[in-house]
Length: 104
Image (cartoon, rainbow, N blue to C red):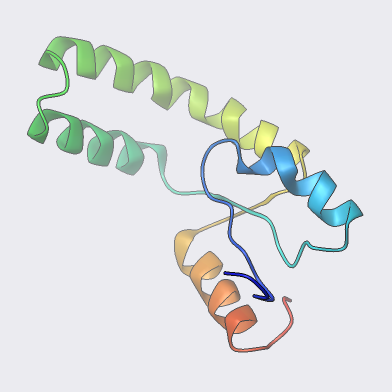
């Protein structure tokens, strides 16, 4: 939205723009979702099985690989300037920013 005081970049590569946003004075907050890895594995597996994306054996193997890689992904994101936080905390902070309250 043109003229909006906030924008949200979401996804695994969103942390790649944190430093540039900070440099330009655009960064209100940068967060990396931190949730139990087992929960992420089960949610991803249930979604992929329901959508029949690939054979179940492939989905389980891929899910286990992603489960093992998750700590490194989170370290990379925090290394790029994002703060690891649970979903509820991120939602509260963003809602506060939208309401005009500065981040904590």
